[in-house]
Image 1 (cartoon, helix red, strand yellow):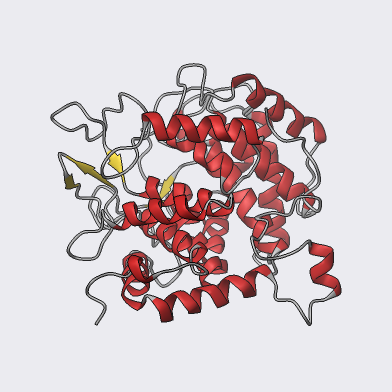
Image 2 (cartoon, one colour; image 1 turned 135 degrees about the horizontal axis):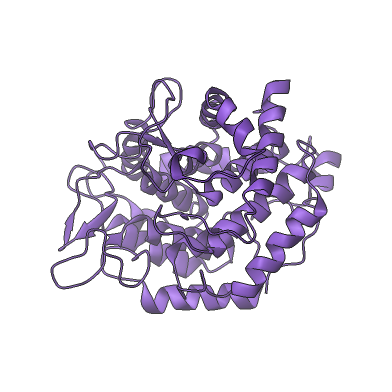
Length: 397
């Protein structure tokens, strides 16, 4: 139910829609643009074609980023922190925008965070944590990179897997982010950490930082991260460590966990990780469309109590529409991608900001949400080669 684990050369990290294989690029580098160059060109086209949309989405992202490249999750007191996962997804937009310095800086922020917490990482790579605050923390102060909130669902395997994947992705695509022996040591310690916590059989708090469960979105992130970092030659990763994760996720798919059939977090297994078979991909997308799609976004899962509306409808997350648009684009379903993008843009506020979610038909206070703005930009860039006039904001002057 998952793809056969193969070296990334045979299935490149973030395989470009408009490119060719890595060896072909190396041979004809002077004639054919790299995926990174291609996306930079698409971003310029987006800026020219729909300037209001481009600037609105980018400004919402940029206002949440500090000079060091660290993001707060949203412009609210509750979200005034730098989450590892949000930091990486928010930073990802800069790769597609062709702003490689900002992309690199955003990944370097996480290296600096782990370097600042290196003693904890070293302990966690040797001894199984027994309480929440002993796990690698999920959220940090955006300026000092100090830990925030001991009492939290910090055990988030998916965030670690995402970091490993993003580092390998950057290096494979010509963006240098590994700068020192200390960086390589951190990567190796993270591999050891995933081994010690037994990511393939021990539950974690998952993408939504809630109860402990065996999340396929977490196990899959770890599998892809380990495979990618191994293929890039940036850390030693035993094949058995990857195999255990592959077997574990295959036993649970197409469900998110033994206790939950469908979850928006599973979209990450399709993009950016691309580890599901076509059959399982179709099942996951079908379930999401049937059970999680609402007027203003995607529910995270059925019966989600976070910001539940008065009528009992769970919170409607705006970024879900853009996630679906990206996936549709990468699967060659351009009409669907366009439709999902339009639905996502319909949730933008009068101030030109994408909220975290809608409750009772209104945006919540976590507005703008960096993650949502980033996915919206990535989705828009994927649509550049198609008619764009009807994705432009009305206030295009």
